[in-house]
Image (cartoon, rainbow, N blue to C red; front, top):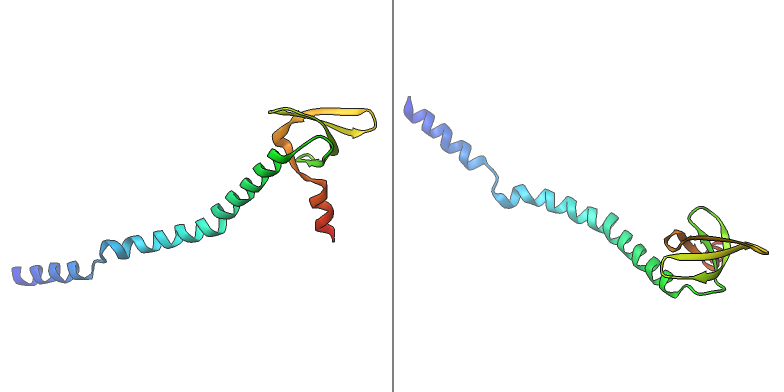
Amino acid sequence: MFYSIALAQADGAAARPNLIEQIAPILFLFAIFYFLIIRPQTKKQKKHQEFMGQLKRGDSVLTASGILGTVEGITDQWVTLEIADGVRIKMLKNQIATSAQEINEGKK
């Protein structure tokens, strides 16, 4: 009787996967998540930061809210855009989405 219980316990221990077999699917999912979501977003964010660093007076830009304008003034946090003749708005610099040139290039 005790022999069959000990034998059953020994068989169960042999069927249990080791640590590497348990962690491999989690690592595989993380790698897929990294290459499909995290890495492209990081590249996009880096490209946007470079664009913001090169922003200067006279550039045509599109804001996150869809307003197309020309940069008239720029500080560390704020941008003044001229959206029509004599109509200027002041908005946060990080609300600039892209340049108008990139939009025109995308249509070609």
